[in-house]
Length: 209
Image (tube, rainbow, N blue to C red; front, top):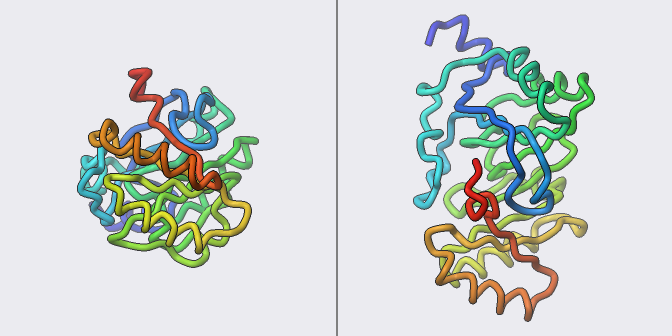
């Protein structure tokens, strides 16, 4: 990447954009809501079950000016979800400032492993064992979404729930490839621990992005 473009990426004025699309939010608190997704490339958290591993290498995704990203988003929805990859690898302040200036609501889906930047209306924290969140993200998370691959992940879920703020909504979500095995475990757990809710990847059942 040319040095001058790399500098703009470092400043958050350009971002390695993997894809952007208008769809229905499939998971968590805002499931069923129409939203425009901005998927930013780059992630080193390395979840073995990640379903967008092609997002990991930021070099594969073209640096794109945030002016264009926001202009495209503004045509579709006032609810914008920034996801990845891991979007907090980049400075999110310029992007969210521009989105806010257009009257759009800003949501982020993050592992929380990096310094929190950006002005967010909704923070969905999905922590991973390999690279834990910062205290700052725990403090401001609106939603905790723990992916359950096996029953031992319920222990991790409780450890994470003990760190978030008291108003954070708690979700357990089955890992897609293991859903038939873990859904009964999650259902039983939520019924016995009703502070938790079940999150499903409804967009996959609906066969939409």
